[in-house]
Length: 219
Image (cartoon, rainbow, N blue to C red; front, top):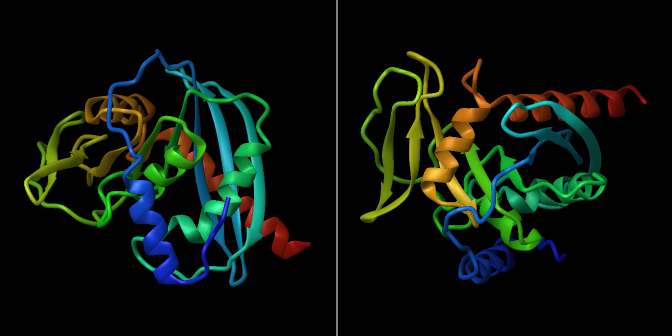
């Protein structure tokens, strides 16, 4: 996989990959999912991949990896900053998951290729993006109860949903990454968020990536 070092090349790669994104219903029942996240030092990215059974969310395996940071922090280009470490962590798992849950955007992105979509196309796997904040799109505030949602729309096109995962807490922004539908994405995120605002697999991946970063500093 080629990772660019400047915005012009990165934008070109995104435009090309966006043409390959598929938003379509899942083709098989999920049994195993993986959540990924990354933490950063000044010079390195520390990624975690946490594998769970679905829908009961029993932890099966975990993997971590780190890689040099070769791309600056620029909104809309997250994949090029943390993608190499995430892909390396995924490769250390011995079981291929049915879906990857990503802390970030799917098609709810200026060029329709957020990190969830980007990873989905690169790895040819179903992916879902679950972000804490909006990057693009307009929406009406969803109802206040768990499971309430509203559409996220950009230029007349539905690009995701704004989902309430807990009663009276801030919603999350859910969008298809690749090879899933908008409805699939909502159901998966809600099933993974039984206790907290953020889906439990992503919470685990976040904690593990931070632990990897801390351990690296100690060493």
